[in-house]
Length: 408
Length: 215
Image (cartoon, each protein chain N blue to C red):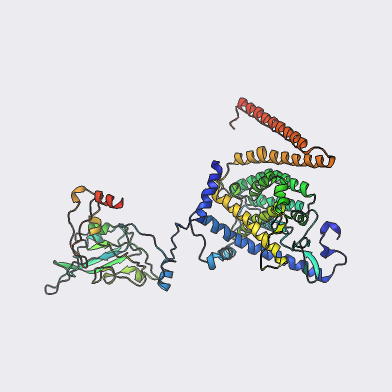
């Protein structure tokens, strides 16, 4: 096995039955929790957005309408399964799974809880074995999340392509262009976190964020966090970046030709990704399941055992970001396509790259013993110079376009 | 900060209790539990076209004279009327003839209100009720038994109809004759007959005083 698979102490030494069972149990729990969380997320989104629009939202199925998603899912499950005549049948059937499976895989590396008191470092004891409340903890965890979220593009792209129809194709072309553009900004803002944390393992990153002052959102200087949230919204195809399924222009976007359970899988994947992304934000920037502590005083939730407290903290922190995503959706109108590309390429990527260089320069300066202020000022000057050069380049090319008489 | 003002708007709305949603469930919850908090209806416009009623005079006589003008004008051909001579000793309507058979097929009726306009005696008018449905074709044909107003002058509440408080008022020909936005020469003039349960209704106030009332 070795360190590539996991640095979970559970799997060290000889492979025994109990660790295997624990891993299977974890897989089951993560899968079920993922499904239930998605179900509740759909309900949560509908309720919150209804509240923001002075409506009531689902309230008929079950208490407070909690079972509405289940009813919708059952209905979709029982519907006729249509495949268009001109579709590429195999790819058409494959695409929903390409969207659905990565959504769950990405959830595997999120630390879901643990005991962070008394220097336990997130370890809990199950059946006499020390383990983390996390399905897998590979040393390249963050990289894994990035890779998986990139794979999710294939699901959307192939769905649009295999439908054999125009609007889905247009939607999927938009999706791939958008995801490729924002992946860069997303990766660069994660790189800032990795630079500060010095590890790619998610549990390692969480362990470093003991108190609010140590949270990566503070140590990386807020900018990577904001870029990450914006880029993640685009990556999730959520409003205001939901050009992929812009109803007014593209009918339903990439999933126009999908019906029945295949549509449900896309839908599920979308909301699952939202949860995963919120959890990733919390993991990378807000200390994951670590209890909130200011300085040396750690807040304690009464009546809950230490081993479960991490999960509660994670839930609370994730809820904040889920709310923020719904809030975005209720507030912001959709971007135009060229605005989307402008924001991605001309603002987010240069900003995240510049901030990454600033952080890197400070690290080098620390190692070499240079003066912090001088390093920061010098880097900032270089960055401003670079930004001016970029503006100049853009202006020159705009002038050239104007002279050539291009219409855009 | 224009961008961020929008975030505050939505956040503030989330806290408010003023929901615009009406919790309507088609009368099911209302009938079963007699609770209207989970089965609200929005107020209907006063001049909405709903199911018909056959009106009666103050002394209980029927207004319908069996002239079949309503049946003739009906674009959907959903009204069937047969007239018959009144029994001189025990007349049903004040006049020579009365509507002996009166049937409206609600599977055909389009609620255009033309029968009401055609009626010379304000016998047929429309209520504001449209929440009634049937499980077979026979039930869809309303006969005189169902259409004629009761002894209190109000429409009959049939078991499959969803009547609520106040919905059976303002059903007579008086409603359409007193439109206050109409010609000023008709303001304050009574040009309608009396009816069972209400007598001769007073004319509605003119537009100006109604405007004052609204403000």
